Length: 152
Image (cartoon, rainbow, N blue to C red):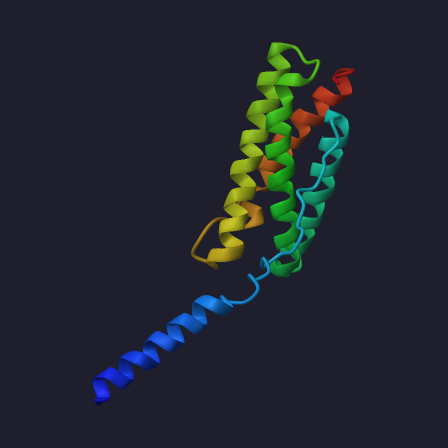
């Protein structure tokens, strides 16, 4: 047997062994069993959660601890997305639905800019101070709608 035939037989044997044994167990996902958080159906509860998360984000930025802000920024993004999906199902007037949509979109823009800063560095996104007034205005609008009366 010449060298090429021996090499071919070795490659064929290894290939067959690979087919027989497979590649092993599939890799586990990077984050095992991660579930999307469940948010309250209540506008009042959602607004209270948004306010709490905003306070955590504001305080983390003020302390210069951007890593502490990262989790709450992502969580508020999920909360706002959930709120946007549910607003049409709430017992709100059309005008209040539009206000909630506008405030939610404004908050998404603001927290999206903060997320860019967290992951892109000083040259990306915005600091909390750059968006604080817009956040306060949007949250105040949502709080006013909650205080107007029942909306579930």
